[in-house]
Length: 177
Image (tube, rainbow, N blue to C red; front, side, top):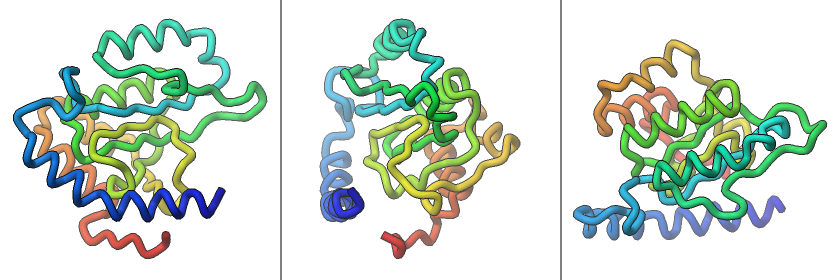
């Protein structure tokens, strides 16, 4: 499992520059094809108690033009405790879409206590309660900082600048992977 994660991380860093090149070349069209969203992939892990709302959650995601696959939403085992209270926001998400993800995390996963380093995720990716990254990849966020990040007046550029500041990624070097 550890080797698989290392391999996937290495592949991501090898191909990440290509994603940027293609995104810059095709800025006029939506990054997610015909869907009017910047979230191409979303993964959600929720507490088992939320499973009763599965249909409602899937319907909501579809109403937001988000692609819903069989494993888009997964549930923890009944006695598995509470899922992680984190969100991962890719650098290609609009501020509006990023705020939508954070609102969903608060509604369906109770709270947000940490942000996953942005550099570790594809640009148009979002995750709620991901367990894919270790604790070094999850930066604690206070309720006050989260409130600033969710400010509706932030532009996409301002949102991502604040996210990078809160995760202390200005001088990020992936030296622990």
